[in-house]
Length: 437
Image (cartoon, rainbow, N blue to C red):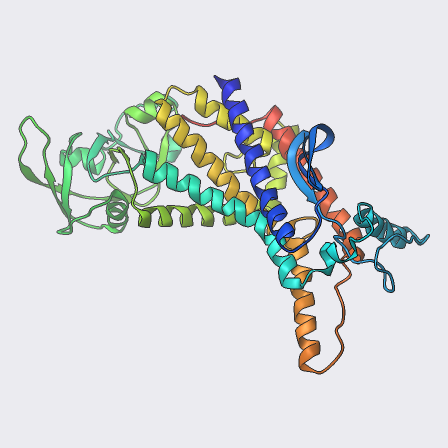
């Protein structure tokens, strides 16, 4: 099942890439730009078919995709099609880019080049690709959260941690060492199945809100619980929350071999987590939180290089919150399908993982560096600002921003991106991240 899961998730990634390129392709055609190629992947072509004026195909290396629009960069001043070449190293590189941009131009295509479109039209074309990933992520989250549901913590006790163990005294077998004090929950007499009716006189509909109240609790805290059958009834328990960094020892941590640590006021309770379908408002909140998490992860990417280097060459433990390549995320998808969870849970987890990947694609592609989509949007915004400023001052149109002059910088960024991506791929092969399922 692992191989089947890897293949299925890889197909989902390829669809995400094709969906991204479809956004570019559709809007480019709307604005009259000719698109000779629509390709998923890079390298040698495995399959292609001509439909109208566009060749659609799949290439051998499934690490991305592209559409080729004619005239992506403007020609040299005084030319309509960039095919001349100078001899200097940087000038030659710039002119080679102009020539490559013009290689598919045929007679009558002069006004169908990408650079001839208005700045706002070029912004729409380049933004449409990442936007399609955002749309796909939103649809997947709606399917998962409202269709399948997700484990949602409720204010009902699933397990009571046995004792308080400072992190410095944690034992590898997750047992309570001699003399370890009981957790506040164990001391107060909590039992599995207790429903928390009120905490310090306040009622809570969600475990998350109750958790915040627990972290802020001090002194003596009365808690009203409704006992599960048999016995039943409502009782008031007295708690004395503790402030300490602890390892919580319970059945779940003992079975997984992964002790859980918390810092702050705590009780030692584990809530039940039934799979619950979410409301539209909860979907928005969840998606927003995921969006924020991905933004934070992307901002931290440069700082992850030493850890990646250590994971690849020094045998250090892989950061579970570190970057993952297409290879690594496909393996994670395979692990989900190969787990012993219910089929619906496996499908929901894979779709949720694919949604997170699409949010990453949305944000990464909007970074204002070439060759990413944001690297094309920024010059178009600058050009629009220049044109508007010129009109306000009664000056002639300054013309398009010469994107070709940025190509030496773009090649430098492309090399850095490929090196970083290659390091992540190697890390995913020799020291992959594992899911704790």
